[in-house]
Length: 125
Length: 108
Image 1 (tube, helix red, strand yellow):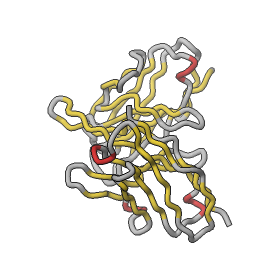
Image 2 (cartoon, each protein chain N blue to C red; image 1 turned 180 degrees about the vertical axis):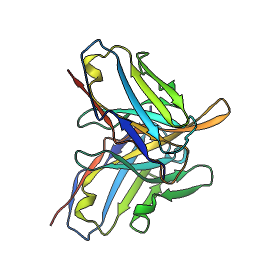
Image 3 (cartoon, one colour; image 1 turned 90 degrees about the vertical axis):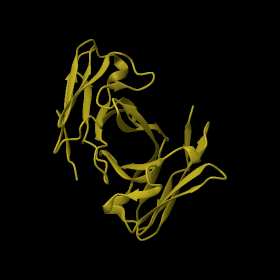
Image 4 (cartoon, rainbow over the protein chains, first blue to last red; image 1 turned 120 degrees about the vertical axis):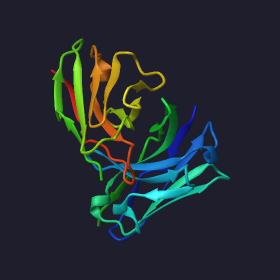
């Protein structure tokens, strides 16, 4: 059973950067495609980016490009999401989630199979 | 970007009743749609993928249907643990993969 454990809550000032970690247990990170989703307080879910297993690249949502970097340390099975130039609107819970790919009727069907518990990042002066 | 629209925003249902949640895509997403359940203070939980396939461990009272632009999540007989927010998400075209804004299922 895959388990994803996040780093603890963070409080940052506007303009700073934050790096959130997500440690995998019960499986090997190299065999997973990790993605990141965030949720502002009382709001819905927003996909930020993640690993594309088809071409081996990390894909970012356009609105975060230039500000977000997603990396992995395979020696510790830990994924990281770093967001820079923080503003108050970045206050949110940041989740890592693993991408599952199943073939149904000849069609590859992606889905977020396992989720971490999330890391609350608060941006405040 | 594909816009996902869920309705209603809030659904008031009595335990034991049937709940029907809708999700509409701004363009066809084929069957590449998933449903998630989220309870307060918890991470989302995968319920349905491929529009109609239940994830491992999901009770049979949850069912998904639809293809193209119109999708439905049905909970046949609501249990107390089913009161939560439900999100649909399309996986047809990225970036970005987009979520609906959510439907809150509350006790009537």
